[in-house]
Length: 442
Length: 100
Image (cartoon, rainbow over the protein chains, first blue to last red):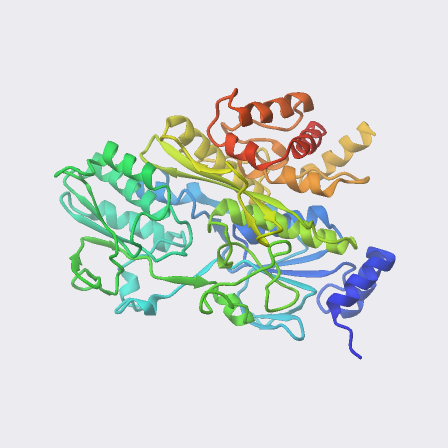
């Protein structure tokens, strides 16, 4: 008879507490000779970094390895303000130094193989890490091959800027700056589900706010793969009307629903949809996406035609593979794919695992929240806020009555809150000290 | 008790979140941590959103009730207040009150 490691951990922990975990992990350890359960986290974005930091606080005996290829954290939330020229890349870029201090092992590398039977992870750098728990927090994989012509060469000119970086967000900003007045910015919205539902509509606002000041004859054309504005619709429509002439002959924003980009041509600067060919001076196509590459390597993309990962809401464990937990944008849940949700569900998973490591059951009825701000103009913002609670009848996390909604209207107060949100969520995710000097402004 | 908590908090301060060396209500700790992406790690805000650390528990609970019934106007807080139970208001209040 074989006893699997999960059952053994549970049995040991239940019987004699965490000391047994230490013995077990000590026997199996290859990397650290450590005392606690080995937890490997792949990806240090809002989900992975928050998870790692909080697990160390709540289960200090856990031996936590974080594997992350980027040397610094670049925030996707707030990156549209870089396109507006309100902030620079350095304002949304933060160090991993404090996270590194908080965990046992921070490995700047890329995971290339996962053996879920042997419970090991191997990196491009040739290192192998054994795990008791594996946490995949890799965000999303962009599917360029779903858009004809969006090859490596075209990607040098056409930026998605849906993973914030100097090469994406930074270059797109430079392209907008170089564009002549009277030019056309063509951007796209992928089909739901996608990372950051209100993000594209906010992007239109942020580019338009820049045009209004610097290039007032220019236009923003939004090619939306969805039949309608997918998030905060009344608030975006109101902002477009109020600030950018939407609905008039002089509208700076031209919104086209049911217009999924099918092809791009970076030489002629054309985006093709099913119905139309649209020429742009600057083109920003966000391709369709699915759960992060790393979830494909682990074989845990089981949901929505094999594109996303289903999880147990109470532990974030994959529904198809034991001891593999999936966080953030890779998951298929009722939660929006937002930074707030990745941050808070990172804590939810840390809470569940810290309970398990202490020989207890995960909270059978958890509660978690989302609060997501979008900018409508340089000085105004608005929100969606939702509380999700475990619902036994539905076997799901759903909002209780009146615990979900959007702002009644945009306001300058909410822009101040949006700036505050960014600072606090960055501090919470990365463990930035109270003395940390934030430079991003709302 | 208070002193040992203060020392623990001081030690935990570098990591950013309150941890107590003795019996911890882990559910309260998690529910309170739900607030931190807006109100700051440990309820210590780095921006315009108010801090929650060190608030008097009765005041905290009264504010949540006031957001819920609308007597205190707000932006996001009515939705959050509607999503938690009064018992959870109390748990959060107690947790944040203990943070220096």
